[in-house]
Length: 270
Image 1 (cartoon, rainbow, N blue to C red):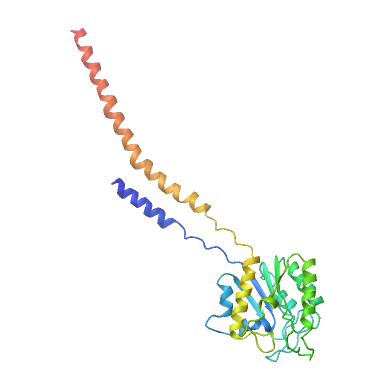
Image 2 (cartoon, one colour):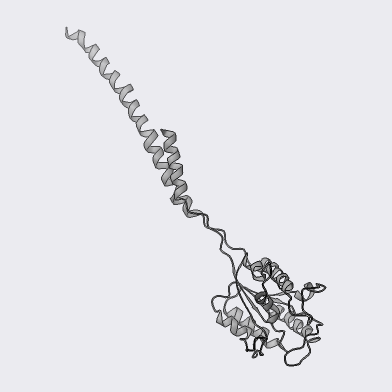
């Protein structure tokens, strides 16, 4: 009987216990131009975005011909996209703890753009901005006709100087990492192939793993305090202790005392 009661108690505790809480995923945002847009355009056996979404709650906005803060140019789909700063403002309150930037390839000068992006990130309390360095010595030509072969080295110098001014700006050296990777990049040296888009996503995820703070552990205090002690203690007190105490007190102590008093009092009265 006691075994059955114990099994019932354990079954009740298990049924009432809440499911284990899964740790929340960090919210992050990717802002890019057409160099990052391959992660949106291409669908391969491994979708580039899924590489990051498997770990993070990601928002991505990447547009052809997007510039940082000066008006963007007309892209491959024949419209003028928003700038990187305007895209950040459109996501106000939803950027998350980390913003990844891969844009500026169609900017002749990124000084004002970097300052504007960092100002917007700080205004929205973004903890970390990860900025991918620009690929140098490439044959790409900007839509304005400006050759990019020597341009992006200057962009990288601007980033290096900005990283000294902004403690929350972290540079990811995509320029070095992507060197000597046949099949990753198109002939212009900056845009991704379908396979390259997957490798870009893996590289960005590695940078996120490095800089995104780990989520807080799930709260396990409430189930231990409210459910288990209340259900387990009450059946133990009622079923086992109370009957044992009542039986011993009545049978062993009270009846012998009454019998002894009656036998002793008889003879003196005679």
